[in-house]
Length: 588
Image (cartoon, rainbow, N blue to C red; front, side, top):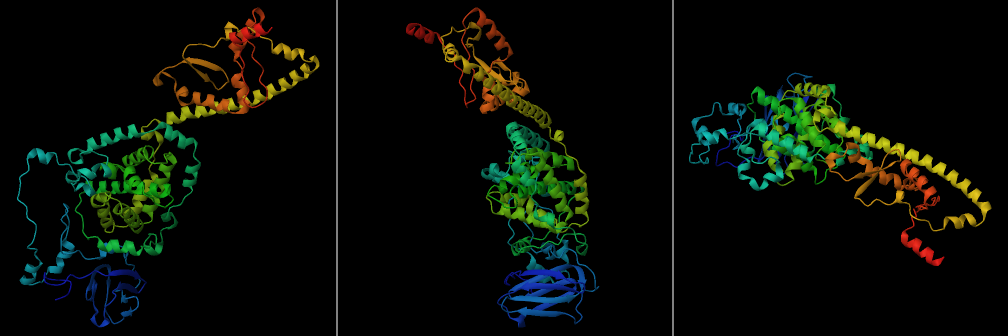
């Protein structure tokens, strides 16, 4: 009996580490089988089937092309490394075998079926049992199958059972994971919510999470954003190669190859609608991954699992999309609501990166999915998302036709996403903020010109006063009566400095009652303008109405005297009070 067909009394075989490569004439198979004897090696070659046995290792591969055993085979064994390498001639010299890096799809399906609630096509392995005698067929049956008492579900329970996960083929997963629910997804009670209801709650949550202050801060203070936009992800450096059927030459690490061997090979029965939704959800997950790679410049941190799942509506809200535009809008909204860098340019960069990823072929996409799988696998309880989505995507992507990915990449490149599509009113917000910044710059320039003219007037005044001795200085120090026109107002008010230097006194009002321009920056402009040494002079100089009132009262009554501020930093505004006048009268 061939070692591949084991009975229940036979020791379970170990799948060894292996790798495949090719040249125009040979298929090169490398198998790592340490601590074995070459006398026990057994190799079987027949068309697309290759089997290798060296106790306790057993490997069975289904190749994408045909090979022959005609005496040209050549095998070597490195005892120190435990590496067995065999060159197998191709049936058609010069033929290129596609998908040799898709290790999971090359492994023949295992005899045991997954207990997961998935529809699987196991016919690929059914031919192995053809021709067996009845005794072997009975041994293959698992008599220890788990049994449960059948409980008939009510019609109401059947209607309330909503599906999610890869291809919308899962349900009831979170019914037994209530403690981990909030740490994995944002949707509450996913088994009891329809797709439309989940989407409605997602949009409400995003609108509530959007912060105009955070968005404007990243918009105008964008030095860090500009640096991140210059970063080039690793897959952008791999261009499609004609030698690899239009795909980029991608190399997998030993850890990634080991993970591919651990996956259970299966095929999925998806209808046209489910297949379309699977493609759209794949784009959504890859967009989130692209943002994470760019925002950290490829150096992951502890926030990586949170960022990837948070930016993906598929992972965070179990969302099901019906168009590519819906995917882009959802991703754009979530980028501007949740992560550290909330800039629309980061959205556009992630879309370009994902298009390049898809254009590089399924090996590149698989490597990215394996990266996501590792990030979730090392985080508790984000590993649940691997069971729902990532693992199935890693297996499914290996079985698809390579021509579909470049077509999807071209569609993504042609897609258009504008700020108005996100329905967050960011265009109006940017317009108002830009007006405020423009007024602030105009005010700063006017302050600088006013400071220069004030300095010239002070120089002339000092020159004139120099000939008068101490009389002019004594006159400035004489006690004056406070003018009622310049009395400090007692009512509760807020002083705002407008862009043209005028001081406006407005009563306090609610946030909604003030114009948008005042909401965004007039108080801030007032602080910024008065903070510089040149602008302090202007802040203390009365505006047109106040100056006229002061001039009118100086002729009729002795009002308070506003001292001309000097050019020194932080000038003082001196106003004499009634107590000061009384003290001066006593002294005189």
